[in-house]
Structure formats: C-alpha cells, structure tokens
Image 1 (spheres, rainbow, N blue to C red):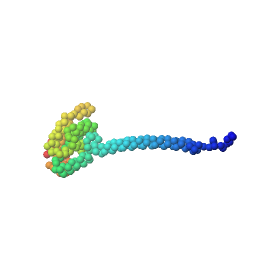
Image 2: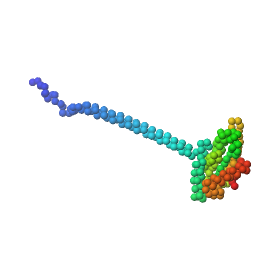
Image 3: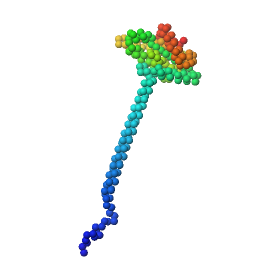
Image 4: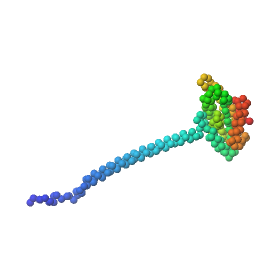
Length: 232
C-alpha cells in the first residue's frame, strides 16, 4: 500500500538542527567577525593615541626646556643672566656659610667699551662680549658659575675657592682676552679687560656687599689703566 502524504518519512530526524540554526550560526559568526574587527581597530587607535601622547609629552618637555633656558641664560653670551647669577651667588654663599668654606667672586669688564662702541659699533661690542664669554668658559671649572652679571660686565662665582686661586684664573682670563683679536669688517682689534676679585669672608659676608666690592675693585683696575686684576 502506497504511503500517502504525511507519512513518517516526512518527519524530521531527531538529530536534525532546529529551524533557523544555520541563520543563527551565520549571525553569530558575523557578530564575532565584527567584534574582532572592532577590537583590532580599538587596539590600533589606542596604540596610535599612546604614540601621539608620547610625542606630545616629548614636545612638551622640549618646549619646557627651551622656556627654562630662556629664563636662565643670557642669549648673547649664553652664560647665566643677571637674575640667575644673583640666585646662584646667594645659594653658594649659603653653602659657604653653613660649611664654613671659602667662596670667591670675579667681576670683569672690557676696557674702554664706550670708545670701542663709538668707533666700531654695537655689533663689535657684542662680538667682544661673546669672545670674552668663551674665554671665561675655557678657563673655569664645571662647578664655577659664569654669567653676564650686569650690562656689559661678566662674572664668575667660584665655590670652595680662596681669592688666591680666583686671582690666578682672573689673570689667565685677562691674558687670553688681550691675546685674542676681535674682528670687525676691516681689521683685527685687540682689547683688554679689568677684573675685580673678592672673597667670602675676607671682603664681605653677603651677596650684595660681595658684588659691590667686586665692582669697586674692577673700577679700581680701570682707574689704574686697565688690563689688570685687582684684589685690594
């Protein structure tokens, strides 16, 4: 007898997947792919952001260093500026008092600057100050503090140094300045310098009196004809 419609052959097998299973499977697979893509994109964006933050941080540090340098350094001579010089002098003087150690201070000026300025111009004066600054840098120790301390005057703080040693350095600077010609547009010009050297506690016990005494000694050197280190 022929089997009619609705016979047992049309029944689903017990182990057959439920209706919609293939669709659900495809949907889950698609969601998984989307999630993987999103995760990869987020990782990529996070990595890029981290690199960007690092770059910004580096640029910021460089900018901060540049700003800090501008506040500390004289742009012409590339020595410490007057404000920083006074702070360094105050700090080193406090140390000298605390540990009962010597300290010396040197102040110098190129002789006849007004005449040189009228004859050769301000650019020549600038070149002279830069040359003198380079000579000072080459004559001192790493622990010493060189600066453009006032207008066209240069100075050095010598921690842990008696005046006798500072005078030796001053003479070295004076001789070198005299021996190095400064070039203008036409000729080589030789200049000289007057230098005052003072020390703590011999000449003064605070930074302002030390500066005043060093300037006084520098002016005495100028009055005696220049090209001289004066120590009282």
